[in-house]
Amino acid sequence: MTYKLRPATAEDFAALGGKPLPFRARAKTAEIGGQVVGVGGVGHLEDGSVVAFARLTDEFRRKPIALHKAGLAVLRDAKARGVKQIIATADPTVPRAPAWLVRLGFAPLQKPD
Image (cartoon, rainbow, N blue to C red; front, side, top):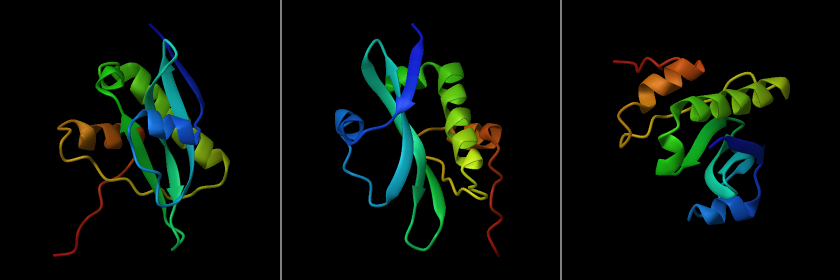
């Protein structure tokens, strides 16, 4: 089954059982068969930083090509709006998350010694 990508609403976050975000955000919702399976986008922190975020169901995680295309769409949208730098952290409970972030175009930060 294919997925549909559309602008996210507050109800979409609630559908995934999450709390409201603690920052202003622009996000997209992925649906499969009318069900919300993911919400992801960029958030704007008070200090001016822009962060990437995603709330995903296991169903959407099992569709890596669709998930990757949705991630690229979110990043293209941010770039088109003039966002120059986005910070992302990998979920430590998802083993492939660091590699996926690299595939999306993120570069690992070098921590000072």
